[in-house]
Amino acid sequence: MAIVVNGEKIEDSAIRQEVERLRPNYERVFADQDPKEREAQLMDWSKENVVERVLINQEAQTNGGAISPEQVESALAKLKEQYADEAQLYKDFNAENDEKIKKDIEMQMRVEQTLGQVCKDVPKPSKAAIQDYYEQNKDKYKSGERVCVAHIVKYVNWQTDEETAYRQISEAHEELKNGASFESVVDKYTDCSDSGGDLGFVSHGQMVEEFEDVVFNLGEGQISDIFRSRFGFHVAKVYARKPATVLSLEEVKDQVAEDL
Image 1: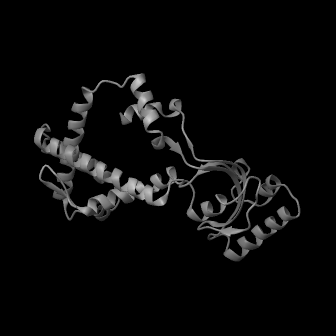
Image 2: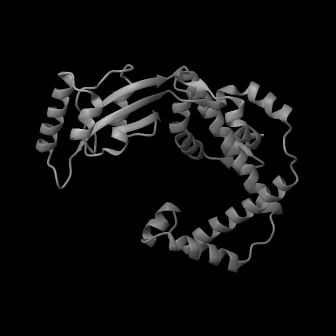
Image 3: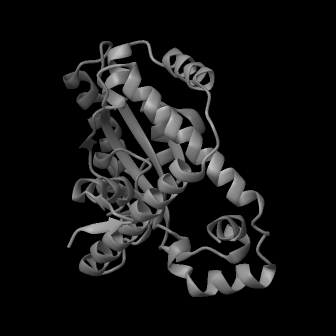
């Protein structure tokens, strides 16, 4: 069923775009949720976000203050400074010329002006309100599963071809199988020796997919086989794992206050 807000129809494509925008972080935070439930909730939140934006835009169009042509031109000039290629600017804004971009800029200015006026009069939430909202919405404040990992890497690039890189990482892996400590092999072989190859705790979405597919399937203390990523060859070791957990109120109180 189509969604209509004050006579304005929301296209399905707008909701699909919002779903895909939210999906990476959503799937990371709610990785342990049933996939069907997760997808349904993602769709609901996406619809709410799109409806909210439409309402804000409508309010901005109706009651937003005047935006001068000079303000729009100045904003456009600053925007163009960020692009080496003007064609990319038009592509990002789905525009064929400056006029479409200027309309988007003017609308964004009206929205910001409207939100600023609304937020100015909103009182800060009390500690009790923050506590109550946090208790009722703990699922929103989860940290995803994390692993503490170090790696040995041999880059494949203009200096080192694939055959050479694989031979070197194979020598490193052989030393590990023969009982050498991971730290000593890192120092001897890796192309990235900062912090002894230690990457600290990483969560889903921080590293390239090929790397995460391996390390999130290792147990504590386990060393991987040789694997390939877009950067080259790796051997990784997981030192510790932390499951997905709900963050404490102290950790997220500012975010909760903002959500309120």
